Image 1 (cartoon, one colour):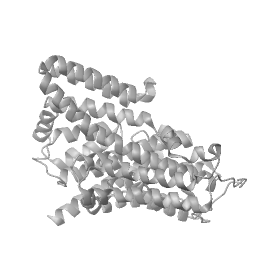
Image 2 (tube, one colour):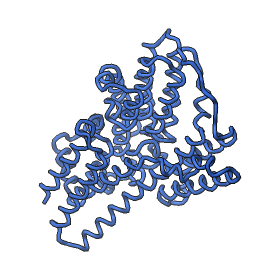
Image 3 (tube, one colour):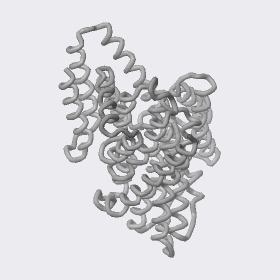
Image 4 (tube, helix red, strand yellow):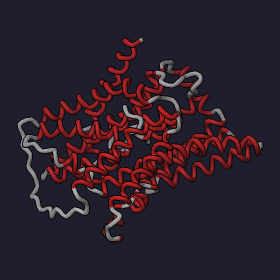
Length: 426
């Protein structure tokens, strides 16, 4: 049975990694993989009661992540529908490319820690189209935006899906991850940002012709209200968890209800056709359900390997062959540039138990950093990179030649800072 499970998982994993060449959506591969794995496990186990208990446990932990992500995505969509992100974007103005690069890098870094790296990448690249006329300039900015978004998401419990998974799973706590990973993440951005800004020194910003009609469905008050309320809710979720000890998905759903209520009150006197695109009902129809389904499929698939102790055996093998946890996690981070970091982190969560590696252990914090920032090394290594690739038509080999080296140097620089920081702390 174990051989069959491993074979099916490897095939499903390969299909996920090769999503673009084989033209099969990774969500389909994840769902088929999860279905086959649980079917094989059910037939081989033969204990209906134990199977039901384990499946219920896996579904409960998976649902928490899915509900949280659904709520966060819906909040971001509502803010975007109200043009709320203009609160930030309209304030970014400078005449020098190097100065703009620094500004964009820092805004992306901090914004992705509050929203998520994918949404932040989309918002910032959309902004670059309004600020930069030359496509070559926008390509360099897109590369730095990917690095900054992934770095910003790594140190925040709500900034990256993998960090959120570790937070909800109890492997990390919000204050500890911010304290431990903030500086390494910042260094992983500063190194490539400084190198890129140096290359762009002396060059001026060439802005596109402005022909915006300025037709907004929302007033400035409504944009500000929904922007600050939406971000306030996202930031308050870790506080809610700490204060109430309720799981994060309860906080995000509670906040979603508040945002929904406020939106309905603000727009209650408007015509239905006018306010419909601004409602939370419309926002729910716009969230990326394909990504949610992928997370559900891959987490359920990995759960079978956890229940059969295959992942625990793999952890022991890695410890025996490599022997050093820091090198093991560094390798996981680099591999996340090639394959999706969600199943990698899900597998690691199953490989190492919380009894042996308690919350905020070195392993979990370093994994959050490496899996979050390692995806920047290749353009296909993260959701942010894939989004940038589509929006600015970035070629794989252009990114490999111009950005991958910068991202790799930043990755190792940040890792070094974390290891030194941890060593000093010890």
